Amino acid sequence: MGDPKKQRPIEALYVREGGIQPTTANADARTIDVVLSDERSNTVRAFNWREGAVVDQQLSLDEGAIRLDRMNNGAPFLVQHAGHDSRAQIGKIVEGSARVEGDTGARQLVATVVFSRNLDEAAERHVRDIFDGIRRNVSVGFREYAADVTARDEGPDHHYVTDWQ
Image 1 (spheres, one colour):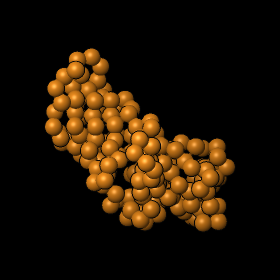
Image 2 (cartoon, one colour):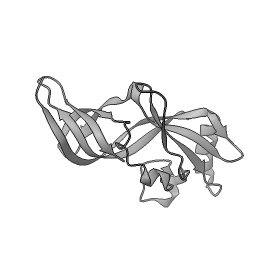
Image 3 (cartoon, rainbow, N blue to C red):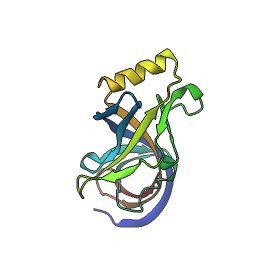
Image 4 (cartoon, rainbow, N blue to C red):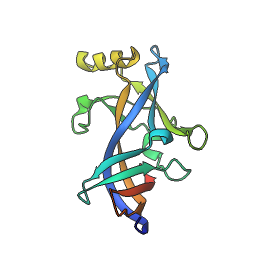
């Protein structure tokens, strides 16, 4: 195994899978909890566009590693990764709801999403599918600011992301 590098700034944008928690659904309030990161399935193979390389990436859920400001100030919840299209936003993260839950080794970053009451029919179908348990996964976009990178002799480098949003 190669030598680890210390806290290299990266500032790269990534996407990974998250999960919807159907048992938390409140149809009247139009809210549901979403798992944005989970330690049990936290290492994923990703393409680092800035470096032009595949990496194995693990997000730290340690206190201070996650920049929760944007999420806890009502970050948008999009039906697709098209932030330039206002129709893509079908809800938002409820202010102050992003939090880390669970014990070490099984921690999850969870946030409550509230869906807009002013959606077109296509977007409303997505929301109904979420509440009906048909759509169970979400794609989570995040920005990596710093990581402990371990170079590997074989396979992709390992990025333990210590600063992200």
